[in-house]
Image 1 (cartoon, rainbow, N blue to C red):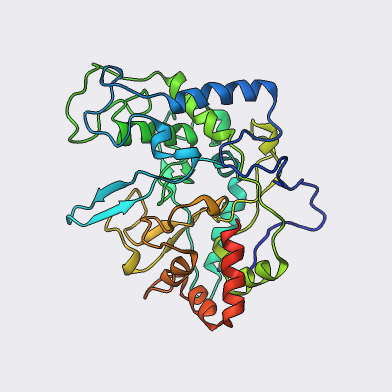
Image 2: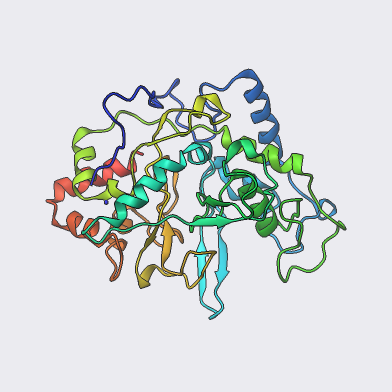
Length: 358
């Protein structure tokens, strides 16, 4: 995965340093540079994130948990998981994503992702990558400040950024989709009950658009967990094993992103937000939009040290297992797994410790 930073030496954009303001290492803090108004919106969304829903609120009848925070404990990944079944009756497990740092992902400039996709076409080491274009209707019913497309062009296609197959483009849609599919709660963005769920205890749409937007704003304003300055040797090994080709350490954000703290910075996201073919062994048998069963979006590694397990289905109990799983037959990341295996044991440990520190 060769080192890509996309940052010119003369570029004046600031870098998000993310060094701890205090000794508490936690993944559920507001952006360090949040304004008072943003802090207030964060607090409102934080409260809603913790609220326990009832059948009278429209919960279910099928649901994973009664509160957002139950699936995303401390805004991280888990403890619940989702079971997905493909048309061929293939069963796949998925861990819920972390929600911290999602505003950074939404803020990444389209041009950054498009440049990475263009560079992928020219590589000869087996590592590809392509954008998942998400198509909406003529009117996208979300806060349009947080995405861009040319108005009046009919059906806009936005760059997918969220979900294991990048099938969702905005955080409003991300929130509405989770409410619908994981809790059976409908909203103006997702007005229909999940397929096969039947009726619930509340007729009509369950939640207002304001409530969905408040939850989306909460995730936008969550900080990336601060990390210590990395060991230079670990950084070098991450590059030499081609990990940083897909897990790109930093990407530029839009200068006009509405949250000033996230606008025009080098965001330390460790992803290219592209789809990659990870081989048949990783396949979940599911097609989502334009993403096939073997294709997955590069997982952002920011805050990985809070993950309880690794890969989309949690099959890897350690970073070492996850790296080796990248070497499956047909995987674009075979070169990275092979390079890792060729390292001396001490260098393998250094690389693993580097990834574990993210």
